[in-house]
Image (cartoon, rainbow, N blue to C red; front, side):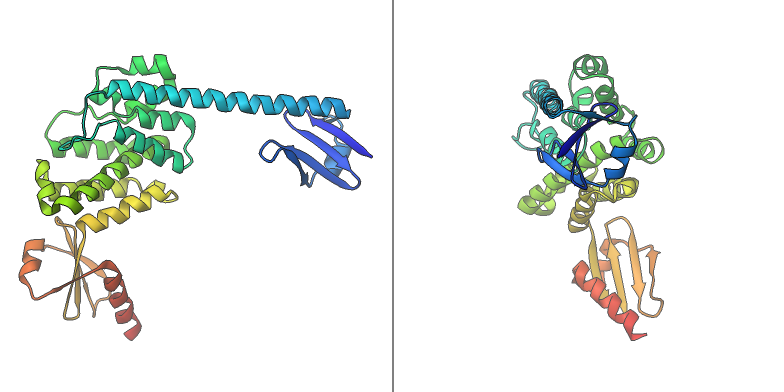
Length: 312
């Protein structure tokens, strides 16, 4: 004989069959075994017995709520896509004929893959609206709610000064004030940017950096500091992809006699066999290029370090 129960708040349906307890799963649309047999039978205030007809009615109601919620969420995301498309109409990615809207779409995709919730994905779609269009935070709050508006505002850089001052101001904000939600949007934004930089660099080589006043060295400095700021996101793949592409674009490794060098263009670290540790050294990449050194990739550098450590 089967007995049906509902939870106190009527958001779960259970059944007792033989000596087993089962809860209805909205994910699989079936009853899944659970470890609540004794609890359901003894805690009468928490679990109320119902008949089979009422159990089916509650299941129908619960699944209807799930469909309604999914439909509502899809509508909000659809609205954000349409809003961003109109707001960025006629804008293009720097130095290209690629419509700018491709960038917010990619940011939203990265956030979705990271498992971000709806408001964060919407804010990712809209993250450049205040900075690059005539729309305001008030407009966004009216259309998408206060939280989305606040997230977009938190991602907006409104600092005066030269390029380096503005970037340093934003880095200070990320390390001192930014919430994890804001960091996720910013990291997705920077990952989309550095993916684009890698693609263009592979086509144009060093000439690509001429598009930017800050040049290659400035970009190397900024992205290395961003990676430091995004340290709380190390559980997300986007952090590690950003880190990997940064190394591909900016970090060069050299091998000499019993010495290794690693430089990103604005700071250099040296590893000597006898000391077995990396030390910051005042050497430019240009100075390294003048020495009788061999360029190696990161994997080879790690292999050499491991070999030297094992020899001792």
